[in-house]
Amino acid sequence: MTTLVLALAAGTVVGLALGGLGGGGSVLAVPALIYLLGFEPAAATTAGLLIVIVTSLTGLVAHAREGRVRWRTGGLFAAAGIVPAAVAGALSVRIPSGVLTAAFAVLAAVAAVRMIRPRREAVPQEAVPAGRAVRTGAGLGAVTGFLGVGGGFLAVPALVTVLALPMSAAVGTSLLVITVNSTAALATRLATPTALDWSVIAPFTAAAVLGAWDGKRLAAKVSTAGLQRIFGVVLLAVAAFMLVDAVV
Image 1 (tube, rainbow, N blue to C red):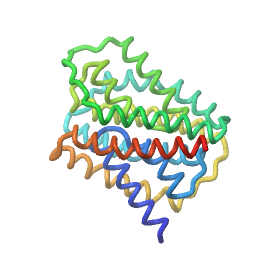
Image 2: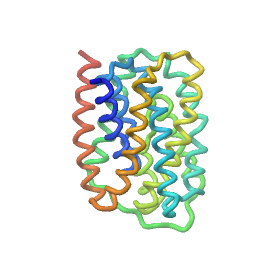
Image 3: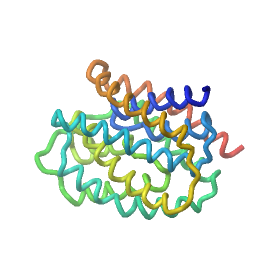
């Protein structure tokens, strides 16, 4: 019963982050799976990808209905990350768990700082250079595959500051990028046998999906910057804990 409650609570938080901010869910999902639910790092990153795919797809549908997804820019960005995500995902299963945990902790700290610090709003452009979208998307895909994260916390600022999308469109478009990159990374990971506890993953995912809808509604009522700071502070604490655990 305790495990079920923890899975539901963690899933709700992950869904709120993805639905409200377009990112941050996966970097909370993996630590929750490891430290609260007893998953090994390799299994946690694989399960995290699965959870994020389903949740992001749900959020994507909701944002698309309101016209907040830039399909051309997001498609180029996501397509560029497919191969890097697949290759990095295949390589990550050969990395020692301690190294993987430490790398994840560093990335989580970077994500937390990005959430806490104010983000400048770019001036919208009618056309985004394809080369810029491809280069940025490839780098994000590699990170997604290697560490098992959706990468929304990197995709949103990249879409805003590098590709000049307004924040409202960046959040929705990032969910397209997350879904595609995470699917590519998961496909290569599933080729390597990994024990997954579906009695935990199923309720975690269900709670995350419901949380994503609530997160979208919450974002319409609460300042996005305020939500980012709250999640950022929580994530920074998680990153510090993971880093200490990896090196001690």
